[in-house]
Length: 340
View 1 (cartoon, rainbow, N blue to C red):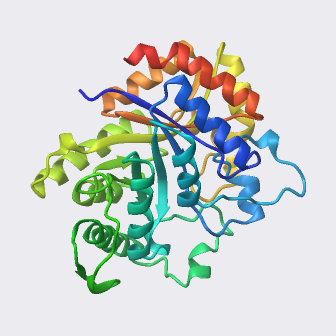
View 2 (view 1 turned 90 degrees about the horizontal axis):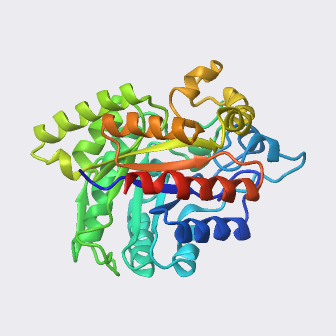
């Protein structure tokens, strides 16, 4: 069995986003023994999304009049490449239909060189974060067939990474004899982890990815998805054991059950206004994320491991940076050593 790994989402968006806090979280993660740090991706981000789709920080940190800052994913990772030494750097996930795959391949290849081969490239379809999300409209990209477009863009990126004179012919992207350097440091290329929680995402990971990183799935749902992935990989002559199974999870750890709930519930309730998943039933979220005391967190992690999970990207819920560092320290002392 692969080593169980844990990563931290840094605040490249949300009410506590900022250069100082991004670096503080990343350096603390590296010092405390976490395996990875993560950013997420959107280019167009509105004040409405800032209020209701909190992937870093907590609802209590939102202030009236705050700008809806969202630091661009790959630029941020490039900055962290120079600030960190050994920790894996990941994006989960690039909104792939809105990214030119030739340019994205150039950016990520350069980034992989800059970070000495520590990069994981997460890719996703880019579901609407909230009802008012307009990212696809701004880019002039249709939501329809974004899955097929993403499939081609993954293949096109890999062509640029691998081929000296890269060529690709598809419905949505075609090019011939593109000489694009540098090539990635990792060979044949950085691992591509596919985001998304639907069956199609597991199948896409099985066909095109080196990993799968869904979000809102329970352990039972993860097990079903892993079975779909394994079956699909074998149908395409791929070894499913070589595809990393990861999850992206909201997390709050406390010294008691009630302490963890106090940290988590305001943000979970705020997210009920998000278009992405209907979490009006708080229990729906609690069944799918990692929230509780040390013992409860270990039990939930064990459930996901039993379902096949190998890597946890933790979107810790924190009203201030002191809370984030405190929870990370507790995780470092009580959780990470338990799985070594």
